[in-house]
Image (cartoon, rainbow, N blue to C red; front, side, top):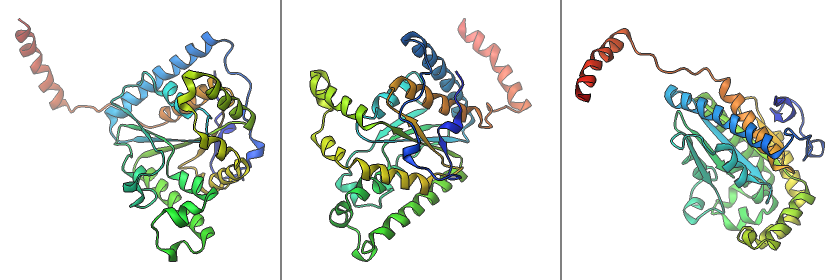
Length: 294
């Protein structure tokens, strides 16, 4: 399977219009077995390169996942990173901000969970919520966040400044060796509806259902407009957005895992090399270890 990155990657060179991108593409697998084999093969490769990244200790990777409700973020994160060494991958979920998080700037809680060198950090939602949910519901900004009123009196300017802050921060991460990949899981309204119905009908999935999901569904156009604007404002060469068709979960997982693997492969990484003196020192330890073995 060969994924054409250009089909999904947005770097700001061209205007992004959400109506032009599909929520479903031709299947990349021929059967359930084929899908599982492909995914397992890609994950093995991701694990290999992540181990190299861990040893190299120069690069880090940030994977941000954003989507409307029921697009499949949780399941995709679980499927893509399963089997990758847990020492090298850390997953952080960001729900409604806590009182402590609200007492800081809007990017603080994500900044506190950035990856160490050699590590992949996965952020399930992120500071982008502040130009999505908060933008669709500006009362959150005006009434629910303790920001001085002189900074929020022009709401349109708030969004412009937040885009700028995000661009600057992601450029800063890039310049410090962090590879930024941002995934928007693009699900159709019909498919989202079907998944919400399934959560109601299947007792084992009732716990996933939130009444608020139905309320937010009423703002479908507003959310799509917000996604379109934020991608146009924050998609850069050094921090691209990947818009992933999400109506078929298997396709989505194969695409995302392939894109991550391709990015890892392109990093100039190498295992640390010992000096001749260090190698000689190691060789001298061999007979000592063998003697200890008895």
